[in-house]
Length: 113
Length: 112
Image 1 (cartoon, rainbow over the protein chains, first blue to last red):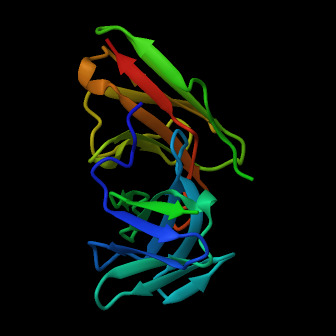
Image 2 (cartoon, chains in turn purple, yellow; image 1 turned 120 degrees about the vertical axis):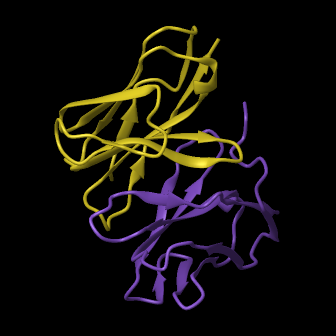
């Protein structure tokens, strides 16, 4: 079947290396951001989120950094494993009472053993 | 863990048919969403609902309608299916505005 990875930026890393996936967001009023992981044939899986009053948040093997000055979000994955191979995309909520998320197109991460 | 269940993984229908896609969540979430996902276009919001019997149009509502009669269930309806509605359809739910949306595994719908 078709892959959500078509036409996407790609990042290829060696197993055990650290990965950094970047995302530029569009709306300076956005106050909430999420990173998702999507494996082939599955729905997006929540990884980590961050609110605009923070610039860094850590989870298990993942760190999200937020730079509001340049509207940039990054996801760092430590000690990348083959199971981390997937499409990763960011999402932003534009604030106010709006429930809508705006999603980035994604980055395809390939981990080489 | 949040569980969002979509009734079918794969579905094949004919042009002009009325198609129902069902989604159920088990976390008592207020908000539910329907997206379609197409290569190169990413996730696009069709409709969402922030309460029972409430609905709001997303970015691409044309040709679709929704129903939310119970809090846990959100249905997407293709009134008269067309080939350009062939896509992956994803349902999601969330607890609140600044809370993550949790997705089901999607329904790959083909309209012939």
